[in-house]
Length: 327
Image (cartoon, rainbow, N blue to C red; front, side):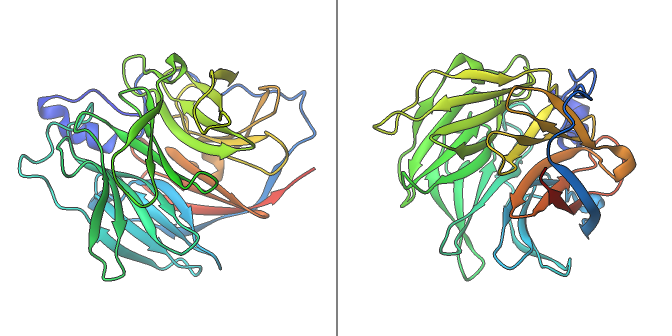
């Protein structure tokens, strides 16, 4: 979730545009020399969202049997999309007493990352620029959210991952250039990695995140990179290495199931890009396919789910689904 600079009369624009970087110049480069790789087919919109109500789709947590839980940034909502495309609001977070004007970078409170446990519990991130509100929340069966891991008020929590092997949450902090960890039972967080490769360069650094094959992978929106951080034997962080560059404005991403091949959401450019193990890139979907401020990607079996925020261009925030065709 990249962002604009905050300030005065620009606050509204900052909220609507917080999923796009000002610094993005060109989209991800394509590499026609990589013909053997994943392709997408049967691309369609599963659900449309209400842009006027602030439903800028930001994150995806898949639900068994189809459908997904979606985080909506300026609407401060967690929503559920059924397999038939029906949309239901699960929770709307309250405004802090000061209106959230102290939220880092964007100056407005937002719901960002979402995650779902194997037992069906729904967790999400709320960034409000205020202690006691910013952190990891759990959605109770009653529909009332509960704060389970408070994070410092000056953090901008963005991606939320459940590391099942280590029974912990991992959270990217986009303005702090860090990855936090906290036990799944809740409690006090600690910084897992503050490697310089995660640092912002003016706006947002660490953004999307996945755990894959003994390592934590994160995108850096400002640097346009994909970063791999090995997990040490005791669960700590090793030294980060940059595995792909030239991905200006990258947001979320996911692995296709073919080794370290990745599908990456390039936000402001409105593209879905395949990134090979060697860093080679190819645009698979763009504006002609309906991409508008592409924010998140989730792969499940032979299906790919993609959210479009339609923040600075277009007017149709949505959840799309496509068939994954591996070669």
